[in-house]
Structures are given as structure tokens and as C-alpha cells.
Length: 228
Ligand SMILES: *Cc1c(COP(=O)(O)O)cnc(C)c1O
Image: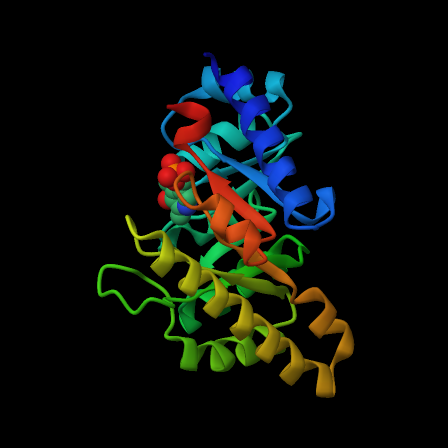
């Protein structure tokens, strides 16, 4: 099967699972992670109906965004300070923020172009040494910083689940959801509007998106099922 067909099939599967989980069809965004393909692959996915794409490298984000500026581009990769100036003008959402200094730099670059930059805080729920993200107990501190930065809009949390163990993945997703709800409650006491904005859960990939949707994911980041 081609990429357009793969996208359509994946979209249908995601929507079916939404229905099973008694969730609204528009409560989950299917993010097509196009990091393994070139511009042709992106074009094929667009043909299949994809409108939201994820990239983990700034160079690829620049190339693909600039070729297809009318679809949404999300940055899901490792953030380097010197590349923030390339990411901010192109990413509608940055999923992978976990350092204070990057939050400040994102604010600085967004201010330069008069943008409100939406971000998610990446949390290392499983505690695996190989995973990036803040420890769950440190998420609030980074969130408080983001709330103070005038050009940064914290929109929720992101995580990567342990691989190869769906029970562990499900626990990780439930942990992220509970943390999001706890943080939302904290913010709501002083800033109900900001609490409403802080509702996204970016979790679930090709192998574990079903569990993620059942546990409340609002953005599934799917690569291989579409592009492999
Ligand atoms: C590559 C990647 C994905 C997609 O993974 P698949 O297993 O191919 O679906 C999702 N999230 C991040 C951060 C990635 O780097």
C-alpha cells in the first residue's frame, strides 16, 4: 500500500478507536510523523488527507514546512538552543520542551516575530534513563515559568512510553493524564483561562496509540504505520 492509503487506513483506525472509547472524533489529532520520508512522501500523505505533520529535526522541519506551509507542522524532537530561531517561526506546537533555558529562548524568538508559541512539556513518566523530559515532580516548576513568559503558551504534556510492554505503556499514559489533570487544577485556582488551554496530551505512537487513546491522548504521533 502507498502512503495515502496508509494514512486513510490509520485515520479510520484512530477514529474507530475514538468511537469505542466513547470519545468525540475531533478530540484526537492524528499527527503524521514524516521524519523518515522526503517531500514526495509528505505530498502523498497530504493527498490521503493529512493536515498535521511532526518532524524531529530542525532542517527537515524547515525544508518541509517551507515546501508545504499550508499544513500544520509540529516539532517533536530534541531542542537545541541555536536552532530555536528556526523552529519557532514554523512550528504551530513544540512538543518536546523540558528545559528552562529553552523556554526562555522560545519566548525571546517568539517575541521577535510577534507570535504566541504553543508548547507541551515533555515528561519522563517511566523514569527510563534513555528518555528525555522533566521528572513528573518537576513539571510544575517549568509550567510556572512558561506561564510567566509572555510569548509562550503551555498547552499540555507529552511523553514517550516504554517500548515493547503495552501494560507499562498504558501505566505511563495514565500517569501523564493524571499529572495533566493535577496541574490543570493547580492553575485553575489562579488562572482558569490558562487551565483551559492546558488540556493536550501528546502520547501514543505506531505500537501503542490504541492504549494512548483509551487513556485520554489528544495527539497521537504516528510514523511507521503511515510512512514505512
Ligand atoms: C519517530 C517518532 C514518533 C513516531 O514513531 P512511530 O513508532 O514510527 O510511530 C513519535 N514521536 C516521536 C517523538 C518520534 O521521534
